[in-house]
Length: 264
Image (cartoon, rainbow, N blue to C red):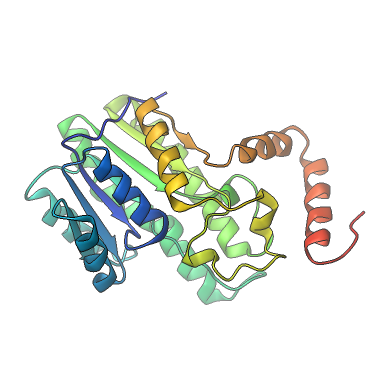
């Protein structure tokens, strides 16, 4: 277990903060007493509008999380006024299905892995120097299990989980805490077009972003690394680890059911 994180008087940055899980996190952090929440998003206008909705303690910035120089500039800008206590590396993308194109792999790799690497390189040394800080990486239950609809999404989310674990091992004794958020289906713009055969349906009913924010606050208060808004994900991961062949066969049957086949 890491150190409990409390929100009053904290400065927090949330990427992908203009809507969905990111917006819900920002809203909840402010309700918990955060002094300042920065919503960073590729869509700068939406980030500014979202911040305006949340009030004077929220600020919106345009940020391409795959641009290391832009990430460095935002860190510098925010820390002119106050040190960043918590960075939620939350931006994510969806791609086409199957094995995907080279462009799909490049985009998901940059957003789901390299974006977290840039933050770790640029912000964690500052946190180490001042003796504390917290980084939350939004991965997905697909990073613990498998999203059978999209190889680029699933593989890069596995990479995000692995990176979060590596950072927790490396920096856990330096006053730095790492958390990894792994939800299943959540009602956001990214899942709005999910049909009845979407692989994410295997996790059951979709949660609301506010439910995810509740799970995050509880986990940070308790100093937990792995945040699972859907408890079912833990059961599925345990089954996967205990008998990989059986789990793979079960996933093939589940895929067949989703696609209208009988499975076997």
